[in-house]
Image 1 (tube, rainbow, N blue to C red):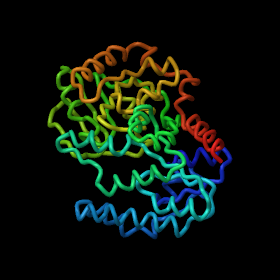
Image 2: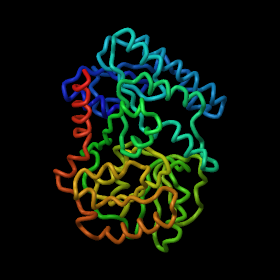
Image 3: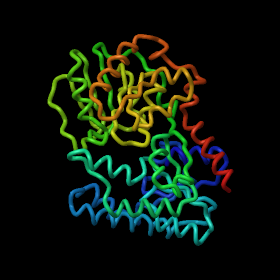
Length: 358
């Protein structure tokens, strides 16, 4: 959302970004100070509760956060033509913007239709799915929205079950800050597979770990936090704690292949970062990676496999590792291809859709 706000500001829109993200952090993403409207003073107790005691009455935390965020936005909201918000989280504030100012409502849905997401996660032992409260708010948001913005074709396909919502879809694949992710340098000496994200069943990490362990000499590097899946204790599987986005480029530089084995995910941002850095990508059909094939040169670096399929993932990784020494599959992309992956390209597509609806 910060990236979107920054790009729309650069394209001449009058942008106000309402968030409890601190202003200085927002500025590190390139958002001008004048665009930032802080919510932290109004929601600080709930944020502290979630950060310090995440396991203390989580259902009540979720409800309290929804109420606090919406109340904070309503209290500070100025007249607007378009109200862009995260699906499920901002419902009351979106209703207020529509009723008070006649604003068009753009709902940002980064994952599959909430009912599809719940079904997929329900089939995975140990995975945590959305609450009934979240499901109800998502469905109400779809009904309220003028546009539902999704990042990939597989997310759009999951809305076929809901024709009214499907008619509102706008597909715009996410981008990458090219300045933060320059072409990578020499990789580590040992064949290295990189995964960036939460170590969770939703991300398919159990399948990923099993695939790597069946490939002698191949190492797996995980950068990110721990979720609901156990982390393997094996000398070829390594972990690094989460880092700031701008620090990820050094990990892309160490790897030979980037893998996103998600069982359910709209579009993992790190895939575009890896591609811009020059890494081949192995991803599932439910990761959004296929939608990043904006040109033939980028498409050659993307292998799509079936989610949850151990054999397919292993074969995809082996093929990508074999190609990692082939320049056209792992060397630096030319500027024209990198530009297609940028946040600028994403913002221009978004701006064109805004102008069509205003």
